[in-house]
Image (spheres, rainbow, N blue to C red):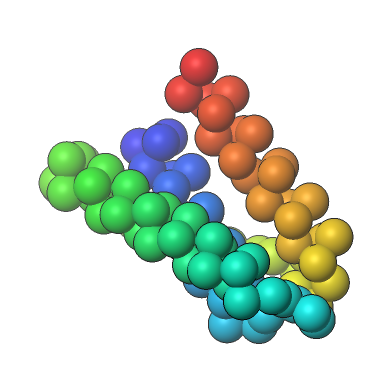
Length: 90
């Protein structure tokens, strides 16, 4: 469930990033972020299916500290989330 919670967080984050694209997002950046979002959605769905009735509920996330219109804010938050995920799996 810890891994599932992390995947929910990451999936929600990248979904929001693409809903509210930061100023100057290039088409290459958009494609990379879309690929990452799609992987996070797949990871989230995998854990939900694997946990079945033992899965925690859907998380409510608060991204109010992230300025989704600012590239540095978005990429800084992405790095934090990815580093957290890697540390958890390690």
